[in-house]
Image 1 (cartoon, one colour):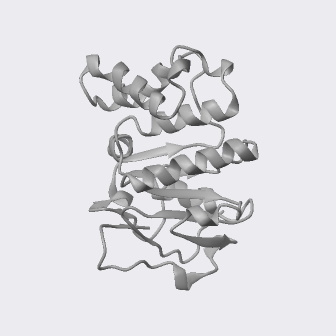
Image 2 (image 1 turned 90 degrees about the vertical axis):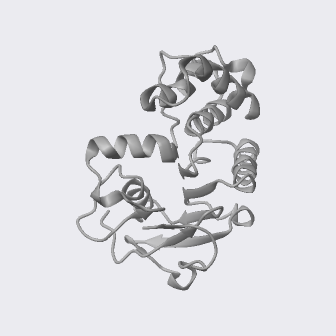
Length: 219
């Protein structure tokens, strides 16, 4: 899906939802904002970083330290334990001392209520537990920004609500969360939401946040 005339500003500490049907361009927008996909024109500024100018090797390092990505299908490595999955971003980006990485992973898993699952393989966990593990992995390097792609799409209603409450808690702690979804039932959690269709925004009046408040994340 090609993006058309996209302009979006997100403040530090906001919980912003990008809402739209399948094929509307939501995931494409997420991918270009995080540097997974490249843009042919325009600018992507995350804080002071011009993401659109970074080389592939630079993107991987920048993303690993600054953005936590939460995928719809969890993307946990099946041959690694949950704790090892959470440690991967720390290993990849050489964050924290080696002796600190497992204790940090355990602390994150405990915060998310699955510390007792740390040494199990992903296949032995429920969908909700795997999503919590994926969130812990996204938080491994303490990024300021979390981007979640349909994080409740494969969860039952009760588990989905608990995941949304976790996101709201992270926002209250100062994180910035961008969530891609087709669900409208969680609007009370969001600072604001924007609607996509056919690769463009439909409620343009809501897109720009107050430029006098906080740091800007711009796509």
